[in-house]
Image (cartoon, rainbow, N blue to C red; front, top):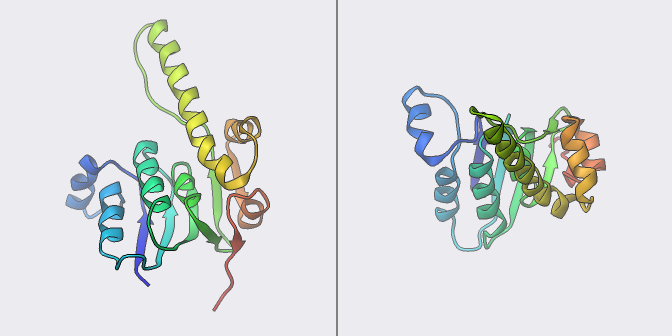
Length: 174
């Protein structure tokens, strides 16, 4: 079964060359799309996530590609934080017993007057609801409950990630 690794920061396609130039591990949407395109039509694929997160736009593109792949997508989480948790919600998943799973509010940078700050706040709140939509589809929890977990920056053990519905099961040793 082909394996696609989601390791290191999740970055935009345009930033990939910088990470490659310095030999730094990273993943962009194009990496995942190329991995899926290399599979035989309908072939099952394994996705291994070990990432502290990154760009939510890139993570959303990866999430969509995995959800719409015509074959079975089996996700294994070694560690998933921030934007990596969006990808973890794209299919059937398992998590290693020692893993951490962290969700939090979307963050950004802004400068300018109070109008710009108010605008940025509205954008971030909208982005939080967009991320919560992926979590809601996976967990069945309501948006308010998910937004509260995000607002508190919630770190979960493997067991807690399963109990909260973000992950389907804890992986067993071979």
